[in-house]
Amino acid sequence: QVQLVESGGGLVQAGDSLRLSCTASGRAFSVYAMGWFRQAPGKEREFVSSISWDGGSTGYVDSVKGRFTISRDNAKNAVYLQMNSLKPEDTAIYYCAAKYTMHWDSSGAPKSWGQGTQVTVSS
Image (tube, rainbow, N blue to C red; front, side, top):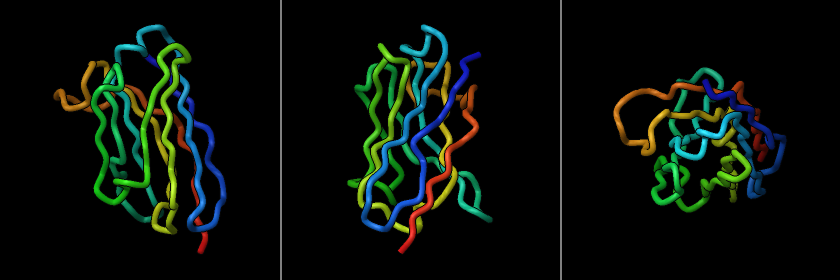
């Protein structure tokens, strides 16, 4: 099992930026597809973004396209979510997740989850 820890959340104003980080244990991280999810109060957990093992393929939910960018640094066992032009509706707990596959679109649910980091956007 891969252990995941998120960081970088905080309280910001609308229009500001944050970069979330997810650090992972294990050398096998470098061949795992990774993703970000979020859950707002009273809402279901929502997929936000994904990235393949080598960063060659990325995906985003429509509501964040053009504002958020996912990236990874396998040498540091880390995946990032750069969030620009933040909106109050982005307020949520953000979770990092790992699939034990090289591509996100392969079948199966994520196998490892972090504990989450809070992002709050005020207006």
